[in-house]
Each structure stands twice: as structure tokens, then as C-alpha cells.
Amino acid sequence: MKLEGQGLIARRAHQGTFANVAAMSVPFRIDQSYELTERLGKAGYEVKVDVLRAEWSELMDDEAYDLEAAPGAPCFRVLKRWLADGRPLILAEDVVPARRRDDIEFDDEYSIFESVKTLRGMSVEWESAKLRPVLPDPVTQEVLAVGPQDPLLTICLVGVSLHGERLYRGHETHVPDGPEYGMVRRSMRRT
Image (cartoon, rainbow, N blue to C red; front, side, top):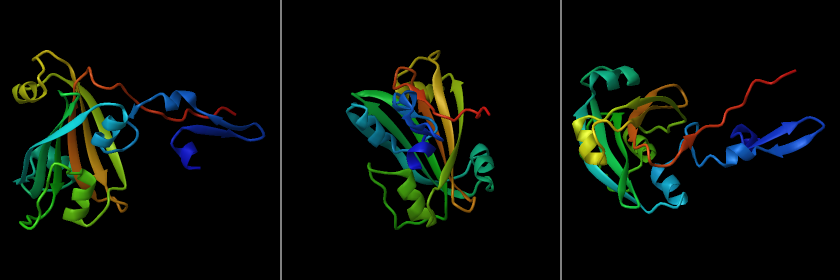
């Protein structure tokens, strides 16, 4: 049942179970959640992660809107960059709305899912994602070593609890010459 839900197999009554060969050839799926470091490593990259900034902050207007929170509400903000085989690949900024706590420290093994558990006491059960092509701003150009006209892919994620509470917002920026992304979805059944 789990493999069928992931789109890796299909069951047909009185015909059997069949592998979805196309689904298995998609190395990075937009429709699945995973830790980027782990997935990049499994894809054969030598991965290094730089935590560029980790600090208590306040929600900006667009973040507050996505999180259904008040602008200026306290949050923990992390800016992180992934390097694959020594070159910049992904820049991500995660924001977790939470009361300030001075008893928490984060290291380079930072995980958004573990951070949400620590700061909010809840687990991320599902995520929504919005994708958009963009041109880099000057900071992104410097951090990802791209030019002003290099197209980038942004993915804005909102992690949600089992009961619908919005727990975090992640904003990822991906360079175009990194891994190819795809997704698997079931088509409508024909009767």
C-alpha cells in the first residue's frame, strides 16, 4: 500500500502488480519531503552545508501571510547553503514562528523537522509547495556564485501539523545546473 501511495507500483484487479519504471528514474521528487543533505549524498554528491546565519528574528509580511501569523511575530530564522562537490547548489531560509528561547543551540547538522519539534513541540505531517523561476538578487548572486541573468528555481514550502497548524516556512533557491527535479502523480482512471 505504501509503495502504491508513493507512485512506485500500480495494482490492477485480476492483472497483478506492476512497477512504475518512470517513477523510479526520478532522483529528486518535488512531491516528496526529505532532508536535502541526505538525498544529495545518496545521489552521489559530496555534500557540505554552511549555516550562514541562525538567529531569533521577526516575521516579515510575506512569511506571516504564509504562516497565518502576525507580521513582526517572533521567529527563529536559519539561512543555509548546500554545496555539492564544492560548488553552491541550494540556498534556503527557514523560519519557525516561536517564542524566543535562549536555551537552544543549533549546529551544522540543523534539520528543519527536528527544529520544529524542539521549538514548537509538534511534528510536520505535510507540506505545501509553490515553485517559481526567478532571477537572483545581489545577495543570492554572491552566495550561489551565479550571474544576474542566471535563472533560478525557488520553492516555497509551508510545513503543517496533523491538525492544520502552520509550523514553518522554508524558501529554497536552486541553481539550474544541479539535479533534475520531477514528481510522480497518478492520472485520472479511465473506466
